Picture 1 (cartoon, rainbow, N blue to C red):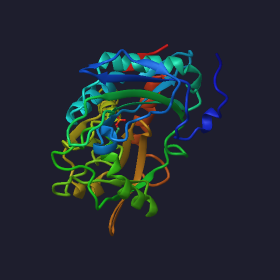
Picture 2: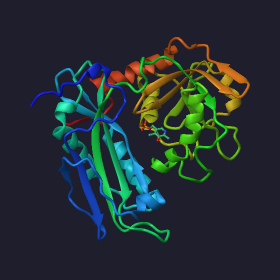
Picture 3: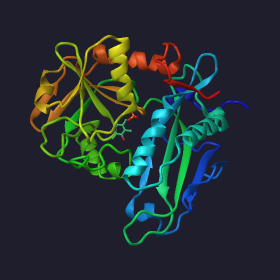
Picture 4: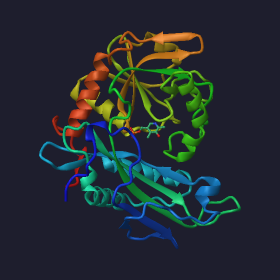
Length: 341
Ligand SMILES: *Cc1c(COP(=O)(O)O)cnc(C)c1O
């Protein structure tokens, strides 16, 4: 076995077909034991539930190579738990958590030549997902489902690393009150595409969504949670039932409190307060932490003191700490690192 011949330090964030993926089927009330396959295609009935009424949930996590050559995943148990809860919310049979973790191990091991080497800045992105495969024409949950897990090597999400980005406050909503905002489902992304295309066309990296009921409080962007630093140096973390519970955000909250000894304020954050904050950042598995230098809400422009050149000191420290933990150079809190091989 030998590493694939890729330009590891210049991968971008894109799909590359790798050697093996995991597939399991749910039929007659039970999941089968699952298997690896070289076949990257999915063949579906024209009336499959996913194609008609969009029953689909997914996850995203990464595997990293450490200096000693071992390969680890970051908190995969939380992905197993979240996709379990996501599936239940849209009436899909939840995929067993133990089996999820076994699928992660199998896929990483079978694609070990695709795991970017230590020091490249790249990682192996894992995409577990579940969708309805049996025909459904009258609106109801499907009878049969497929769980798949594939992987693709990726570089940093934003080219040029941690350069600050600009957001615009969206005129659209990402989630409905009491809707599926806290669920990791493709349907939340389908409805954000239009707003996202408009934001990019207007020169913004992402949309910032406000709470859908009152348009008063900060929620998150299309695919990342938001963090702020206030004048007192506290980490301010928006809280709402329609924000997706980001594992990266939950990890930053722990890091800030227990490793950096900061005060963390998890609460509703009024958009009105944002202009008084010192730093802002977006967090999620794909990009880890993207510093935000500017937020534009129609004719109001908020420029954070940290500016558009560099990340602010707190965001930089958080980024350095989590990437150190993921890369094995900073000791991880108990249970955060899953050793695959
Ligand atoms: C996946 C996702 C995130 C980030 O979650 P992580 O667990 O940190 O990757 C944030 N917001 C939305 C809407 C997401 O789908």
